[in-house]
Amino acid sequence: MRIIQAAEVDAALDYESLVERLRQAFRRDITVPLRHHHSIEGDGTAVATLLLMPAWQAGRHIGIKMATVFPENGARGLPAVMGAYLLLDGQTGSPLALIDGPALTARRTAAASALASSYLSRPDSERLLMVGTGALAPHLIAAHAALRPIHNVLVWGRSEEKAAKLAKSLDRPDFRVTPTTDLEAAARGAHIISCATLSTTPLIAGDWLQPGQHLDLVGGFRPDMRETDDTAIRRARVFVDTRAGVGAEAGDIVQPIESGVLDPADIAADLFELTRGDRAGRRYYDQITLFKSTGTAVEDLAAAELVIERV
Image (tube, rainbow, N blue to C red; front, side, top):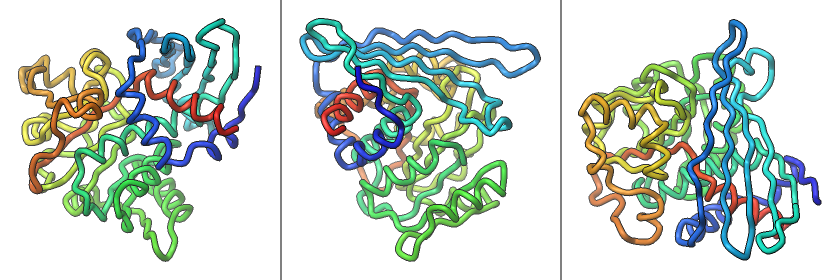
C-alpha cells in the first residue's frame, strides 16, 4: 500500500484538472451512502466532529475518508480538519493507498466550489472576497481564480493579523491580494464572495448583496452553523452540492427550511443536475446566485483516483 503525503497531493492536483475530474465524477454512477457524522464532546471544550465518508464505483475503486474537526485547534497552532483517505481496489478490496486527508479535502472542496462557480458566477468575475483565514482559504482563492479572470482579492477574518498574513503570502503584482476590516464594503464590491468559517452567526448580510453576485458558502457543516442570513436566501437562487447532505447538515439551508423561509423544492439544482445539464445554472447577468456545500464522498473518490494516476 502506498503512503501519499500532503506535498504529493498538492503537486498532483492542479485546479483546472481537478475541477474537470469532479465534473466527470458527478456525471458517473458512483454509490455514496449518507456519511456518518458523530459529535464528540470534550471536557470544557467545543464539540468536535468525526466524519466517515464512503463511496465506490463497481469494479473500479472503493474509498473512505476518516476526518475529524476540532474547532479549537487554531489556538493550538493546528488545523481544524485532520484525517486520512483510504483507497481500495474495487475488484479485490485490497488497499491501494493511504492519502493525506487534509490536503485531499482542501483541494477537492475548493475545486467543488470552483466547479459550481463555472455554472453560477458571471464569466467576467474579477473581484473575489475571501471570508475566513483558515487552511481552506488559500485553496478557495486559487480554485476560483483558476476558473474566472480574478485579479483582485480581499481577505477578511476575525483576526486582522491572520488576514494580513494570508494576503501577504498570496499577493503578487499581477494578482492583488489585500486584507480588509470593512466586511460590508468588501462584500458589496465583490463579484464572488467565498466563505469558509465555522461561524454560528451570519457574517454576510443579504442586504449587502448586489445584482450579479455569486455567494459561495463552504464552512458551515452543522445545523447550528450559519455564514449568511435569511435575506440572502430569499434574494438568491439557491444551489447545493448534494440535496441529501445539505438538507440534513447545513445550517444555512436547514434553518431557513425549518423557519419556512426556503422550500426544499425551491433549491434550483445540485451538482449532479448542473453537471449533467438537467437544470440550468445562472439564468441572467444580474441574478444573485448562492451555492452551499457540505462536501460529498464523490469528490474525495474522484480526487484520490486522480492522485494515484499522477503520483
